[in-house]
Length: 123
Image (cartoon, rainbow, N blue to C red):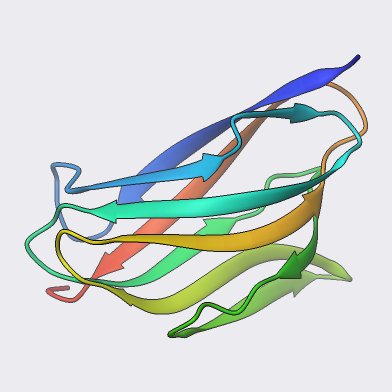
């Protein structure tokens, strides 16, 4: 059984110290499988989160992005492949939000590094 590991990297645009925890889960998944994922943000900043941008790693094919209950999303593509998903959402201070999407994992077992950019209301 081939498995690959998912790592989440967080880049905050508004602060030098990480005021929020952003993860992509699950952390482990089968190579070549279709997987339901969640981008989770726990906002511990002093301002609301206003958007999250997820860069899709090479080899991962996004199949579907669920519309958040409150907010919207847009995708960017290179050819037919989704390479970025940007959610416009409000995550108040002290709150949590899970954004769902499904993707086909790379065929070969390897590590996948997710890059997330978070924007806060205070710039």
